[in-house]
Image 1: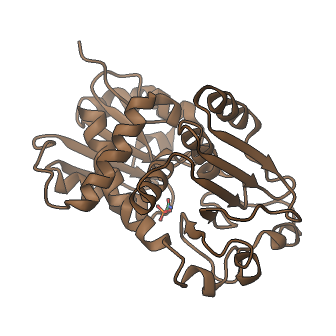
Image 2: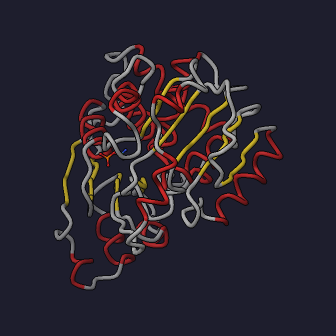
Length: 307
Ligand code: CP
């Protein structure tokens, strides 16, 4: 029996799988009509319990482009809302759809529960801990822009959220890649994920580091990356959190130390908070190319889980 493939964490991918998905996304972007309909006759369910513009639309449009039928489930549509177990829901859904793309903003265990039934591939469209398809998009964007990922130097500024965890795990797979996370005190990347990423980096020759210090930023970086201060599906109990985040804003002053860098952002953006309009809308920003690449990456992921 062929094993059903899932993408719940970056760590579900071998190095070869990760490289193939990123390469395929870049190929899709270069040849938007060259994909055919490999998912004809299959059905993808999209279950988004939280808001999404980029991720849901990219999987919806991508599945249709690849020939699949698409079913949409909103936050209150499934009986999990009234107490049905994820295992029972997964068992039923697996008899009716081939792929379930789910944004839960909750525990990975829920996604693993759905994935425990043979036949239905589960794709994590953002859980509490990880946003793996975002990281694959990010790597595809860097690869398309720079031609290669090896040796790239990235500074990530902002909350150690699910975008950051996925980027740490994915960047750690790339030999010679360096990602320097600068996270506000109290908002670090999950310690267990960071330990996993650092262990992977030792194997591959990548460099993953984290500090809460904005006083000695490196210069000459290739990419400066930030993320929204209010991660989807979360709140910050500390009423003074904006004071803690303020030094981490990407602005013109910061740009002077990294004039050759490109700017990336997972979006949605809040101009004047994590980034100024001058940087986000300026000539060095590739944030909207990055957003467009979510479509090509979603297609590469859909193809991979059903290959
Ligand atoms: N970056 C991202 O996941 O965007 P959406 O929340 O719009 O899907």
